[in-house]
Image 1 (tube, rainbow, N blue to C red):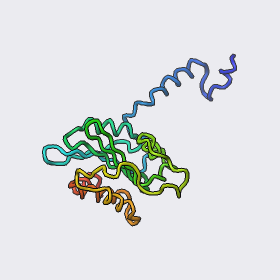
Image 2: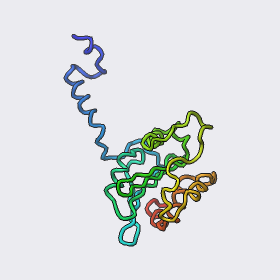
Image 3: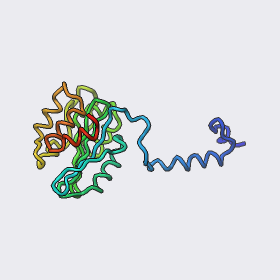
Image 4: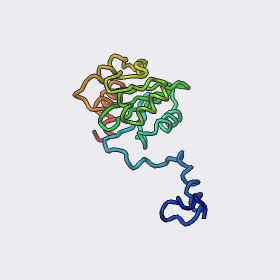
Length: 190
């Protein structure tokens, strides 16, 4: 028996079974179903403007930024597509794909200290990750992400600064400002 075989997890009889498990685990990129640990408060909605009206759809995994960007790319219209994401009643994320351009926004940069999804977003956007809770608190990313749709960076920043609102309420306000507030609230039963 080799030294490696002595270290097999309990219940595995031989190296071949271990190889099969490692092979199966290499399929991590296949993510057809939402993760089990998604909080009920987490929301992710895609919105795109087509034929004079907004269309909305729920996104299955608010923690998978790459998958969300891919989904937004598949919904390309003249105005592009937007993802509105709220995580754990703590912060929200906006992602916009317009042609080949991807814009990213995070309502609180310090969320990257506690949430891998926020850290991933900052890494993708090539933005600095705060070192502690006091460092760079507040919104970061492309503040003018929705400016051409009628919502300035100043308005988004004001929403982020409103400590009375939860992230889902902030996103509902953004959806209303852009013209699909009713559809957003109806989709999420808000």
